[in-house]
Image (cartoon, rainbow, N blue to C red; front, side, top):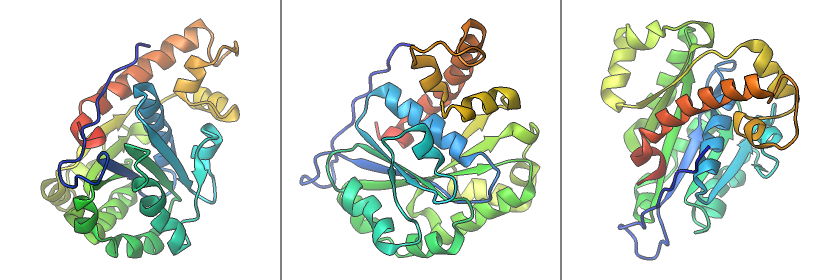
Length: 255
């Protein structure tokens, strides 16, 4: 697949900052909503653009990001210094235009308390911005959990809502309730839709710790994973996901 060329703009707010850094956080909302699956797709997209980025796995239970991308660094979301390192060690380093951190599902209060204490205005002056990604499914609890996070964090960050259709093609708790509609009005999140992928295919990829991108790029021939039929499917699905990311480059890349 051809590489997409994107130029990252220097920060205009603080001349001491080499470039603007966007800290992407995959919120630790309800389990089973495909948050880490989404994080892997986003990491694949960042890699395809060849933009300097850092992957951080803060899921001490499943470590999905580190399984799929061994270069991802592990961080403990239960320790204040390791949560702060998202900013102090990585976003402020000047090495990365993008930092992607995948939280543990159900990380709840420990991360919300940290977010409430983040000096967003001060960091924005240094060229550091936050984008929070939350996955929802047809399960109403997934929507209410995300809304609770947003209400706690507020509008100091930008939001991406990931509609994961693995259990059905409607998210009524988000689209057809007063609470959901108010969330959409107040925070105007970007929307990314993930269509259901057959369980058998995901199981094959997961067993080998292969993202769509890794399966498409590997030179190893793996029957049922990247033979001609499966490569065609994976390429089509990846193209659909990447097209949605590309529609939100201003938010996701700051360009």
